[in-house]
Length: 159
Image (cartoon, rainbow, N blue to C red):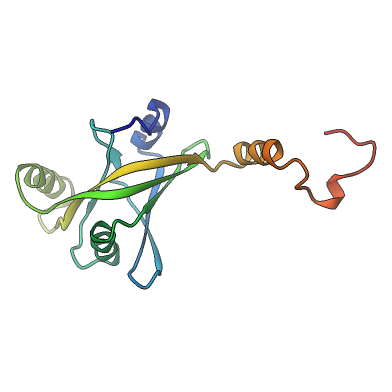
């Protein structure tokens, strides 16, 4: 697997203060976004998170995505307000076995015996884009220098 995620981004994802979302789409094209505190990066460079409810909209959409090779978006917002979008493909859903049982037991120890685990999902990242305003503004001004509001085109005014 190609090295898509930088070590800096892996560290940001691993920070418990980072907000992490997963956005999927249904077979009808309806987007669905959920926050995933469990989201982390595996040693193999895959994005992994836990879906607690088998009947959730997110789980249904992920099953649709893995069957039809659809892309999933992962949103990252660091505590210093840098934002990233990672596009990925679901490549694995663990619903039984040693790895699944290990996570299931750990979740029940942490959250109580009433906690369920529908699946452990793994995504293969295919692209990363920093969406922070200063980064995107710089990119826009370099690639599209004429794309400005008229009020920013004042004669004799330098930026």
